[in-house]
Every structure is written in C-alpha cells, then in structure tokens.
Length: 521
Image 1: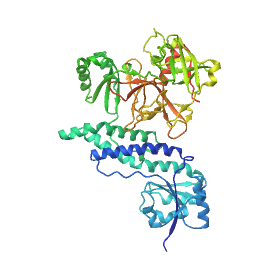
Image 2: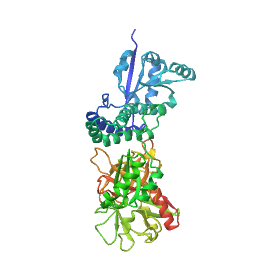
Image 3: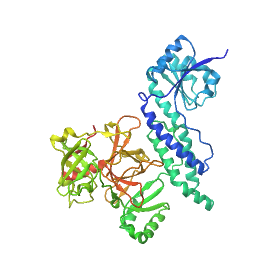
C-alpha cells in the first residue's frame, strides 16, 4: 500500500517572520545581479531560479495527526484551519515540494520520508522525550534535519528557513571568490580586459553576500568557504610613510580590494602620484586609486531642506536628529557647514507641521577649536518646543521606529544597506562600501556610502546635508543609527562621505564640556 501524505504549504507570515521579507528582498536583488554577471563571465554552473521559501507541513490522515498538525500550522500563520491541503504519495513529496521549502513533519510521519536520500531542510516535531531521543538517533548522519518540540518550533523553524534561503548564496559566493582570486593572474590580454570590466560588479555582489552571511544567525558550517584574500587592512607603517612623503595625503581605506588614497589637492596629482606609487609598491600594494579628500566633497545645500540658516534662502540642509545635552536639554543635530551659513546664529527647523526657531550653540561652530573640526553642530531647542520634536527614526519603508546604537565593526558594516530620510530624498538608498577609513587627524571618523547597484533611487540630493544614515535591523525591530551625511565626491558621482555619529557626539562633548546622548525614541 502506498503511503499518502497531506501537505500544507505556508508562506512565512509577516507577523511571525518579519525578517524573512527584509532578507528576501536583498537576496532577490543580489541573485538578479549575479545572473547578469553569469552571462558575462563563465561561473561554471547554471543559476537556479529564485523561488519563495515556504514551510510545507506534512501529515498522514489520522484524527491525531490532523489535530497535531493544526497546532503545528498555528505556529506559522494565524487561522491555519483555512489553509489548502495538497495530496502526495511519500515518493512524490520530494519531487513536488519546492527545493527551497522547509518540510515540517510530526515524528510519526517522518520514518517513510527519511528513507529517501535527503538534501532538504526538514524539521521533525516531537511530543515527548522518548520521541525526541528516537528522532535524534534517527538523524545522526542527516545534516539537514533538525528535531524540535512544538513549543520551540517557531525558533527552530526561523533558523532553518534562514539556512534554506542562504543555501544558493553560498555557492554564488564561492564561484565569485574563485573568479576574483584566479583572475588576478591573467593569462591573456583578453582575460585581463574581461576581468577589469567585471571586477567592480563582481566584488560588489561578492561582498554583499559575505556581509549578509556575517550578519546572519547561521553557523560557520553554513557559510561560504572563501580564500580570504579579498579582505584587507590598512597597515600603520604604510600610512605613516605615505603621510611623511606626501603631505597631501589625508586618509586611506580599502574599497573592497582596492586601496583608496584620499588627497586634498587633485590638481597636482601627477606630481605626487609617483611618490604614492613608490611607497605602495614597495609594500606590495599594486591595486590602488588616488581620490579627492573628504574635505573637498560637495555639500548638499539646496532648496527644500529642513534646516534653514538665516540670511541665505538658497542654502539649506537637513535635520539629522536630536540629542540630550547633560541629560535634560534638548538639542538638534545639524551639519557644521550648514550652521556656519547663518548670519545671526539662528536656524529654522521646518517640516510639514510647521517650523521652530533654534539657536546654534556657539561652541559647536568655533573659529579657533584645536585640532580638526568634524562636520557637526548642535542647536538649542526651547522647552516650549520639545513636545513638537519627533525623536524617532524611519525604516527604509518609512515606518517610524526606535533608533539603535550602531556596532562600529568592519565586518558588521561592510556592504550594509543604508538609507536616509532627508529634506529632499525620501528616502535615499545606498550601501556602505568603505566601512573603515584611517585619517591623519581623526581615525575612523568617516564612512563612505555609494548608490546601490541597479537602483534608480540615489542616496542623496542637494538639501540632504546632515541627514542621518540608518540601516534597518534585519532580524529585529528598530533601525541602527550610523552616521550623518556630509557630501558627494564630485569627481566620482554617487560616492558620499558620512560622519560617524558617535565621533560627532564626542566632538560636541569636547567643545561644550557637556555630555551628549542621542535621542532614539
């Protein structure tokens, strides 16, 4: 007699698995760009089409399994009683159910399925310690199968679903790793031309995949096996020598595998290019690029912004956020280059709900402050206006959320998708391409953000200076508050400098001899 299984396919609900939709959107975008690359360069194997990852709950038709499976299904979606059933034989199940699905099976139904050669994500749901022991023995050599009690099912299912979603990304990363690693030693002029033509796109996709894996909840054995030759750190010896032989060098940092050297006078590029080249090649660094220093970036002052300095109606900026000075005085955070436009130390903070006048704190725009001045200032909010200030931040989709402190770790920030809600860009969309920049004066104060690949929405426009750069928390609620927008590299449009908010707040504390704490809710 052929065993019959009754299967219910359940798309992860937004209520129970909100992270799925955030990650899935990113993975779909990455896969499309990988497909485009696959057509240009030979990556050894075909691309499997994207499909939704669902939970497929299987059972036999008995009264007990019907009741128990309803309990299982309720762990995935409200009102599970209304779900549609599909009928398969045991042998048909692995052919008919999508390869990206997670099979969820009561222990009493599992035995026939586990006789097959399994490369599917499966969860066996047990009811007591005996079933748990028997199931655990049964799956000892089955890497893709997990055991869970009903009360732990949602947690186990969430991790298993993530493993299933990321599985194709692992092979993509490993193929790109091979392409980037092996093609650095070119065999012909044609190979060299093809490699340089595709290098930037390939590195972007590769590092976005690695960044997602690094921020995921997956164990190491589910992550790609890559050479590690793409990860670079700026050597202190190289920095010191560059600063010594070429005073125009202001900072350095890696954009993927290319060392970018920031200089403040591009007009004399030829005169010091050889000096920089000699230093770098002496240390075995051949992949480098000389780019304008951050202090030369064009600020985004323009019509329509929310911070209006008095005296010039054509030069505006954006409100970054709010902070508490000495734990009780409310302040607004704005760009210094916006504040210095004001003729009377006043700015108008405007929104659709009206505007308020705010006085610039003089110490935050000093003329003779010792050391470098970061691009941040603060203004005082009158007690009568505090209730009108919304201190929450927005997700990429525009939902007002509590802000979270950023983890300033290169692994955490590398290829992180970020956004702003400025006075003009609503939103602006970007991605961090340089999470660590070593500056001659203020180490690691800046991050470089670029427009996202294949996106019609740019990161920023005129009027967005001072807007806060944030990132959605993919696995939780709220948004990480990362940095403040400074401006754009006019020689490399689509590349933006941002100031880490923690470094900016520290400068305000030094200038005012007060404490500053970012308001996040």
